Amino acid sequence: MKRLFSPWRSQYIATFKDEKNKKEQCLFCRLAREQDDSANLVVVRKEHCFVVMNRYPYNSGHLMIVPYTHAPNFEDLSREEYADIMATTSEMISALGTVSHPQGFNFGANLGRVAGAGIDQHVHFHLVPRWNGDTNFMPTIGEVKLVSEDTRATFRQLKKALKK
Image (cartoon, rainbow, N blue to C red; front, side, top):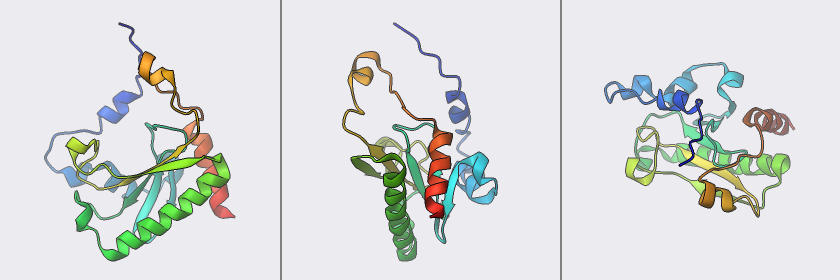
């Protein structure tokens, strides 16, 4: 068996503390509070949500749209939050289209740990650009996913595109 070392994953793993005081330890609540958007890769802040680059992306340009409300369930969000999340998603699809020219997108949420949510106590939505050929033999044969563009480069391009 081949081993691929990815020491940066330890940063992600370290975000999972004990189950007590989840709200205080919530990554998304911390990002909402902090103001260093460049260091945190927060692309844009809206009235009811913000957009952050995924540090462990499935593809280049993988974003998360996160409501400020700390809630585990989709149905805990207000109509205003739903509307802001959808409008922001539309804006980000347009910006990613300008920056990366994907042929499609995956958009959705993993609701609950068993559904794949890594952070299951704060509902959030993934927007993943897709291109023809972005899935190939590497994940199947080599159990390796290639991300073709540096996350910080995509972050800078998105910030520039959103200023227009």
